Amino acid sequence: MQALTDRAENVDRKPMNFLERMYLPAIFKGMLITFRHIFTRNPTIQYPEQKRAFSPVFRGLQILNRDEEGRENCTACGLCAVACPAEAITMEAAERLPGEENLYREEKYAAKYEINMLRCIFCGLCEEACPKDAIYLSETFTPADYQRKQFVYNKQDLLIPNPVTDKEAYEKALGNRPKKHLDN
Amino acid sequence: MFLSIELATIIEKLILIVIVVMGSLVVAMYTTFAERKVAGWLQDRPGPNRAGPFGMFQPLADGLKLFFKEEIIPNFSSKALFVMGPALAMMTAIMTSAVIPWGDKVHLFDRDISLQIADINIGILYVFGVVSLGVYGIMIGAWASNNKYSLMGGLRAASQIISYELAMGISIIALLMFTGTLSLKEMVLQQQAGHWNIIYQPLGFLIFIICAFAECNRTPFDLAEAESELIGGYHTEYSSMKLGFYLFAEYINMFISSAVMASLYFGGYDVPFFNEAAHADMGNWLALIGLGAFLIKIVIFIFIFMWVRWTVPRFRYDQLMHLGWRILIPLALFNMLATGAAILYFGK
Image (tube, rainbow over all chains, first blue to last red; front, side, top):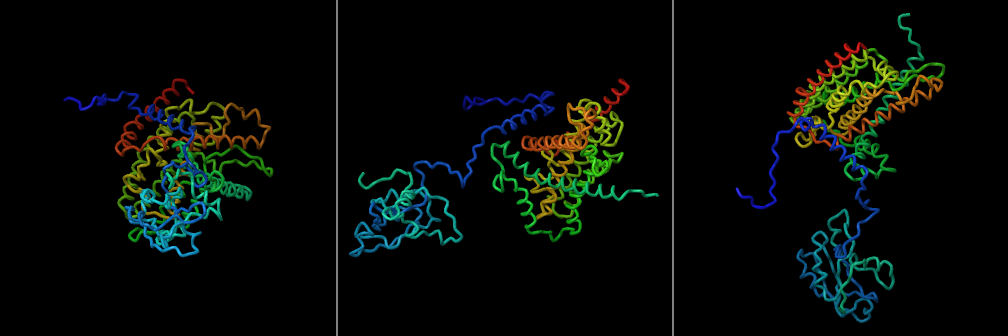
């Protein structure tokens, strides 16, 4: 019969010779191999103390962005909710009142913004859909809680720290990922 | 007087018993830790390292966990036997340590204290007797569980130990013919004066160590608790510290059989390339050095036990029986005949 590929190898069906039937040489050989592994460096990362470096495209929990003056970017257009394949995002819009210009960048803002992190599949489509650079996926991951309802993150959970009042926390939350910006 | 045992002797022996039993328990405890560490090293990972420095308190945490677990006695089990099983396994495991010569004499309080609980003249027969009792712990526990998997595990353990005890016994007979004594202490003294028995009995030692693996139910002969086929084997139904006792007994058995192998074939507390008789003035230090050498030998044997476990896969049951009855027993018989012929020829 013609072989389908040229990689086929014939199985050696010779009866075992005396040394092979004794098993002991094979066992010693195996023991030497395992013994050598005592001296190899182990690749373990001691997790809570050490962390593996993320890839630049890592997608963690969402964060709601602010601009340099600390105003919320989100205008509650709903494009992220439409883009979301898991239907994890809900929001309610509100109109900016006079005197709130330092809080919201544009005339409309999200009064309520919720992401159900148990539904979210971290695909990043919300980030791609957003025209205002208001939502992106951060490097935070593995949230833990005692109740399922705690995983519905509201706006306070999602908002990035204010860059004016808390510069350090803002930088930390921003992470090292390359960000899209409105101007490009 | 008929019974003229001094009170001091009784106290001395009691203290020795407490030390040896406690020592075996502590060693067994840390053997479980060492097993996990060695497994880690052989598999390129660090092993347990969270509890205390280098994970030193891991066995304490494990023990505590086992004590606090819920104790489950199945409704359809024979309850008395169910409780007796692990107790028996533990008891027989500890009993063996009585005849092992841990070291030479120590001179304390104007008394010569032998570092051996009982120097009985049939020491090796005692070890054999008690070790074969060990299988009752497994069998009783397995049968009392009223579980098919347990029963199969128990049956496997029983037939395995019966099969391998034969080969082990015959390999020992060759050693007995050669040394002419049944006392472990006597054997160690002979090896101290001459050469280690491993030089004269390499084949006997090989058979003995293979059988020791089988008697301890260690991989590659751990068919009694083959997880892939029998869930947990004989201890499927056990939980809490009863399970802990079974697992613990296995490690004590390992420790004791390492000690027996070291005394029978590797000179016991004899320090290699060191003439004890010429340094008799060192007194107690000599005994302590001997004890240290003995413990190092035991540790090496325990490491070999683990090393084999994390290298060799488990035998199939028919392979196990084939190895025991059709290879090891004829080999042991041949070894016995060859030893007899050599003794006749060289007229030792």
